[in-house]
Length: 172
Image 1 (cartoon, one colour):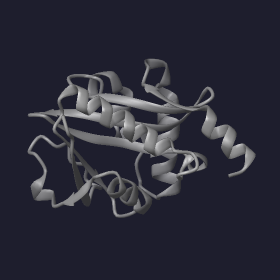
Image 2: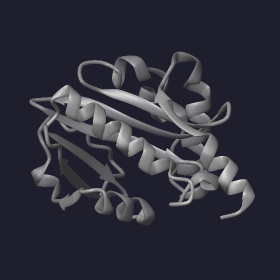
Image 3: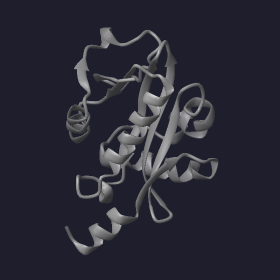
Image 4: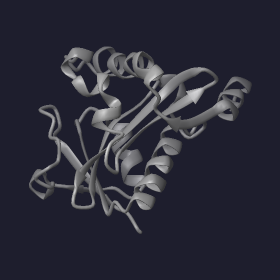
């Protein structure tokens, strides 16, 4: 690990989203979607990004940001979809903060799992694209099991680009 990586890892934190974070969250997510993975999507195509408190931080849901100093470097949302179920959404980490040496994604997931357990959520579902291969590995290493689209709860917020689905049971 380089000295830069050690400093970044030491300063890395995770906290709940605050309204002042809105533009920084958009600035993390949209470039990863469009520039890095070539998905034709903008912030305007994702109205939830401008309504995070209403969309995610209601019911048993939540939204977290990973921070390095004053910069937001990762995001993760949990949408309460009822009946003890929730949907993991908007899991994005800036390229410079990915990987085990930084731990941003893992810290975000740990915050989500702790919240879900405390809130009485029994299962977390997610949809993703075939392109996010590193994300698939991260989910699988952290207890997510691939399922078919037909196994999703009816209330799951399906995205047109989603083609791969997972569930993780939460011990309560």
